[in-house]
Image (cartoon, rainbow, N blue to C red):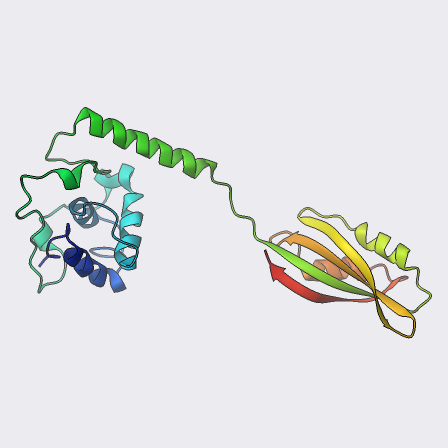
Length: 225
């Protein structure tokens, strides 16, 4: 068993193929098996090996909890496809270039002060960026058609009524009157809403409540922002 040499493109390809239908090296939760294989990989796999890259980034997020992950760490040759032999590290014992900075650290080798400092700085920068990253708010741009009863409806008052509707996550935009025939004009008005707070059903209910002016409301266009 094994993945070949995980420090080579061929070994990473074996890992990528192995993870095509798996979330973890063993079982259904992260374990010491994932830690052992992660530590054998010299860095993030290339983007085209998306199964391996997805796994690498996921296991990397457990850096602080690695010691508490279940299982017992075994030799690399105990993991992976049965028909592949582990050769990671063979012929490369004299070189440490591939292991400059290991985010998990190593249980078997002493970490230099410089490498430790760099690792801690990078982790601090990552945590800082993660904390500052704003939560994404799903928004939509909606174009509404508001139709009056007849050509005698006060359209200025109708628009005033529509714009009087206020709600958290609702911002009214531009508007115009559009002829529909027989001297009747409809109000076409734009608004931007936060999807979790304002929906078209709520808008329709609030707008058609002005029954002295509004006959009906339709959604003319709806686009995610």
